[in-house]
Length: 353
Ligand code: FAD
Image (cartoon, rainbow, N blue to C red):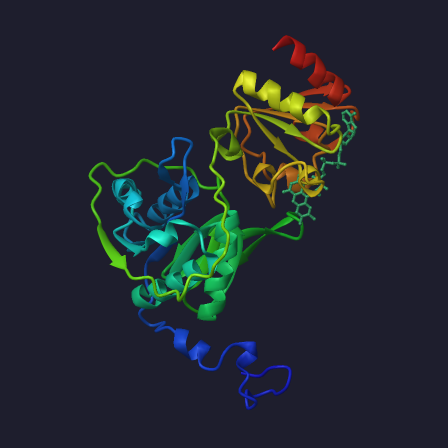
């Protein structure tokens, strides 16, 4: 394999990778079969560790791909706090759970997680490896793919399996078309957008095996990692009512919207412009490069309705728009369109709810 200095690898630089690294991770593609899923966990509002929803969605999708015939492995990081999660993980389809058993790994360490996942892949030889397209999944999956010299399709919105070949569907060209991508080798790695696949019923009689895996990810670097404790209101993909704010809303209106949301049991989400301005974290962004949402009511204040935004609200049951421009493209998906100043409407709502 060549690099900038040579065309045949004679300089020994191995494309910038340490010598021998590609060989170290080369897999036996003849035997690759089944699925491996990274089981992402988080600390819930009650202080307990929980399995992230997107993992359960992925597991349900796998079971629907071939009527539950595929082998499914999971890999999870942590210590004794994981034990109560086993029944749920098995119930969603994992048969064998590799637990990288290390108290220090209850905290997130992307490099160490990636190295261990790569090693578990070498052991289990799955045909497909799936991660949630969460901030952490997006960080680990490319590292794993690079270690294994494998392909990665990010942010998939559909998966189709034929024999062992996975067709991975994702929006392309700013969401104007859907690309179907296949990898040329194994393992086929993808991240899956949260909220894309419906959550099916867990199995009634969950059974599985846990294998304690010794951390082989090298020394933990002395990094300062801060775990954000998830609040129920943070997960916009599960919210029943969303108050969604766009660039047409003034910054001063954000606390008003948050206060209204609190009182009516809603969650505040936003367009990408407000994430770019630094007003909201990316986890609140609706759309193609944000979250797919499916609320009963989507209240859009000062959002124009770019295709990338609309890509995230296709499953909203009712869309109510407040925009001063009656021609705003979001009108194409609106059930009700109120032509008005968004800040004024928010202030009025604040008085009456
Ligand atoms: P604008 O387009 O600026 O619209 C503001 C709206 O507010 C206008 O309709 C205006 O009439 C209205 N308005 C102004 N003042 C008032 C007022 N006082 N009262 C009422 N209405 C008012 N965007 C996303 O949202 N999510 C994504 O996931 C996403 N992914 C992207 C991925 C790619 C690859 C690219 C290229 C872009 C992506 N975008 C995404 C950006 C997207 O193209 C738009 O730029 C963005 O959605 C526009 O945000 P907006 O509607 O808040 O702002």
